[in-house]
Length: 533
Ligand code: FAD
Ligand code: NAP
Image (tube, rainbow, N blue to C red):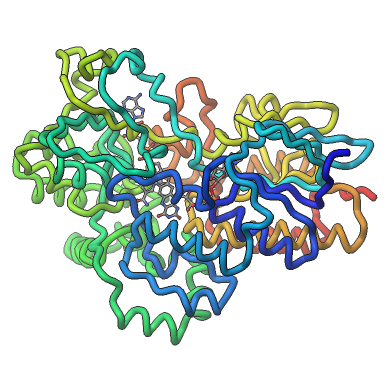
């Protein structure tokens, strides 16, 4: 007979680890399946040179355990991938999580059995188990886009890697000529590091990105002491900001009510501070395209100051979408890397890639021969990992079909027609528009509270009603349409994956508004849901 659990959790990254801990505390029996050879999720897979967090380390961390918080010491203002992976491994050990996690195991199917009110879950290792609930902690950015999107990729004679599937042993670029395709956050972190090693780096840019310096360095011990003294208060303050980041607290002033000098001073101060702080300079930067244009112009001015060759500076300057409509990149020496003799830029709007050849990259203007290719082309975001699992809900309906026109959820947590299926940071929740540490903790706690509530009542199933889901989806779209976010061809919209429906997936109403809504729903006995015995 199939092994029976209360809950199957898919994924052992930031989300899956805390989910397991919380569910165990609630007395549920849990099995976690993880495709990777270790826990860590994003920080296990993305080992490319320069990979690091884009939110200050103090804030990109769990807050549920004051003891964990007090004992873990970050070494850098923006922790690098090895330190983040070390942190998540420490969490797995500290809370004795490993005994319920099965690694190197990919969940392939999850089928709802309405009569038994259980999910039948199968894996690529032959496991067949049942569970009352399934929690998808599968990650928003865990499925790399395939290099097959670039025709001829399989013909390239040299090594190539996707940034999101970087080899554990690392890559030595010494003496190599390298093509980097893409200029998103991953590329922007990797390019200066690869350039410091390689003979030559050719960057293939389809759309330039806005990037703000991290000003990374060792953690300031004054900051550590301040956080130690005020941690609970600072965590609360972070959760009360729209993006879940304390230092991005937005001022109350609209940009266009400030004088040009005041604006320049505000942007300069935040540029010097670094990172996402820039977006909090005024309260309308993500709402009013004219206000936004002042911040965009400021960053373009910075690019022109840093990059010595005016033609390259111009090509690196984003002009076709508002700043922030694609996730701002946070870099260490990105624009300055283009002042090196061994870095060159190919503008794909002038000469599109035709194909990958045995020798390198062929554009409409000619062939660029290289020894190695780095695909920094991003992810099938938010829905990719769920699409890869054959999830069948009530009446055998497939999740992939239900989402054919774009993902529809209730609060990003539940899906109508899929009882007892929970999503962590699913589409329709603040998710990737928020400090993910904050978003994940809130979701994990809501889900574990919901499961505990059901267990107490011996309830058999919970499911969002189609009406509640439709109303939530309409609200998510309405809020997005009142912002600058839909104005860029971003992965938030699925625009980066050929053929993917164009739907703005995360919820941009702000973390506090969203959290309060989730709490209201729970307090009202899961309003908008049908709970069956
Ligand atoms: P993940 O960490 O993606 O973990 C999901 C896990 O599920 C993966 O290990 C995957 O192997 C596993 N999985 C998926 N499908 C299956 C299956 N069918 N069977 C078994 N296992 C499966 N967010 C921020 O807030 N700040 C940052 O600075 C930041 N930096 C990032 C940098 C990079 C390079 C990337 C790619 C993302 C970054 N993010 C950042 C977002 C990041 O994904 C989240 O912060 C967080 O790590 C997500 O945790 P998770 O557990 O939800 O998902
Ligand atoms: P991304 O932001 O989607 O960037 C992918 C890049 O590849 C874009 O420049 C894109 O161009 C280009 N590209 C995609 N397909 C292409 C094709 N077929 N031909 C040519 N160019 C192509 O992906 P990412 O850089 O991996 O980042 C994804 C997200 O992960 C980030 O937004 C962020 O949330 C997270 N992340 C965070 C950090 C961090 O700093 N902590 C680091 C890495 C990732 P277009 O823009 O034209 O599509």
